[in-house]
Length: 393
Image (tube, rainbow, N blue to C red; front, side):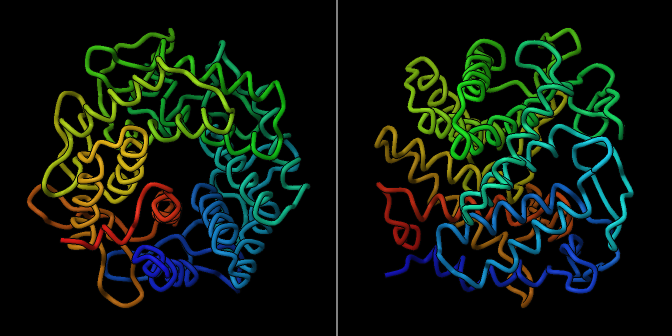
């Protein structure tokens, strides 16, 4: 019998994202505002398209629905034919709605998502060429972007000259490194290891895992740092609760894929999960974080989704009901306040503390099917958990 979550995924979420396909120009539309106006001439984003490829590949792999295959291949073809730079290597940040490069910047964050998506596509379709492409890009990043030890420079010009990290840093001149990019590097490498389990890749993953213990972890506040300065030092104390809890379950996933145990790191992950539960959890979802000393109390869609997976992961690891109760509470909040009940829509970006809708689009380069699609699959699959309990009062 299908769970409530699987029914929502198959009947509501997947059908919505199918409608973003652009049959005329290739790729997918990535601009739908809160008035449900679809801008078909918006530039097309590498972040959106790789997340689309990853998510539909995941859905195809897990749900065995052959109707999803055309969307996967459509995404793969557009990425390889329009985002790939055949001269300098790597993938552009954005192309026009017709597929011509418009922002030729190369960013490590985007390259990580190409690796992540290609590795998932390879698993879903047994496409060995895609697995090879993913591994070659990983090696190319080691050549072009590696800065110091486990650090990689993040932003580059079209021909791979290092530039300021204007796309992801809140202070590009001071903070060239972000744990946002580093987290998604770990995520990508973990998925790549599933199809290309080399000793070199394993060693790189272990270096990142060690860095989360020795460098990125704030022992005093029990959270992970957001920014690292150009001297590889920590002097910024912003907090991203969504990234904290997402990091917890993604690190656990990496440990499981590599088949290694690290008791010290496991303890840190539970401490981080506890501080997120204590400091960020409310009766109306999880708050966003702290920026420059100011608490950001917005309830953002991806933060809620990653929190559900992260707390579910902590529940499975410990059996403590407080984590499952948090999943239930967040789920209930999302169903009541973030799900857009209008036809041909999905979830809103989020709401402020007072419950007012945030002025962000329902679909845009950063709001792709990735967070929701992966979270639903994770929650459906969790072995110690009956998803129907989320509907209990």
